Image (tube, rainbow, N blue to C red):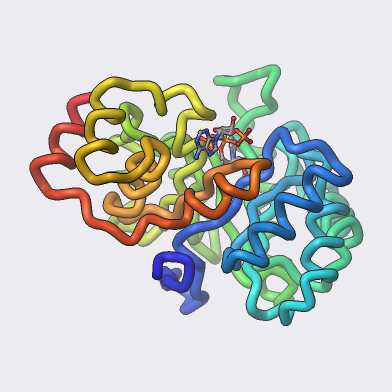
Length: 267
Ligand code: NAP
């Protein structure tokens, strides 16, 4: 069962292959319910971020689920606009407090640039943040550390000066958006790809080729999209606020044939 399957990062930490995304789920009942439904239905990986503003509800659902902390993998992120050593520590502590946890499983730099300055150069700030990340990792308060939305040109400077190579790069990855340049750069470095927006935030589930393939396999279009990411060897974190979708998005124990994967690659 996919929900019980894991990948092993370079440092030996196991990451559940499938997790629940929580972007754009408002703090409060909606986040609490989504996370609780996910956990009750076997999910053991939750992706959040300080910037999502919903960590308190994520943490509350984790606590109320009664599932032992060590069985749940929690990913959160340093906001894209905060770059630097001190602020990285401050934000990390804030996330810990909001989540009500004493460690994070995976801590990520949310993006190489602030969202309102996409494309600008923040190399120095990212390197300063990374120094704090390495210390946090060495202290055991984060079991793994990584990056998000980083392209090779953002990763290379970190590699030049770092003690720990990022363990994960969380990037937009879905049918029609295979990000080959980033994937090919990360693979030999054993930087695991985590696929965000596996349904293209809902935009690709009406695609005719995907819908036809879903009919062929007697699954949903969303399941084709999620299974595609898994067969590309990525960690995948679909988001939903609806219990039936949270359940069905994890029912992906089928195999898309090589020929059909090639067809999906053409989209
Ligand atoms: P997504 O998972 O690609 O798609 C979610 C959208 O699809 C929602 O509108 C959801 O609506 C709908 N949906 C979910 N399951 C469905 C199903 N079975 N059938 C039909 N519609 C379905 O979107 P995402 O939120 O962009 O990405 C997933 C997660 O990746 C995020 O939540 C976040 O944790 C992470 N992420 C990270 C970054 C980053 O910069 N690091 C950026 C974007 C996303 P309902 O909720 O109404 O079901």
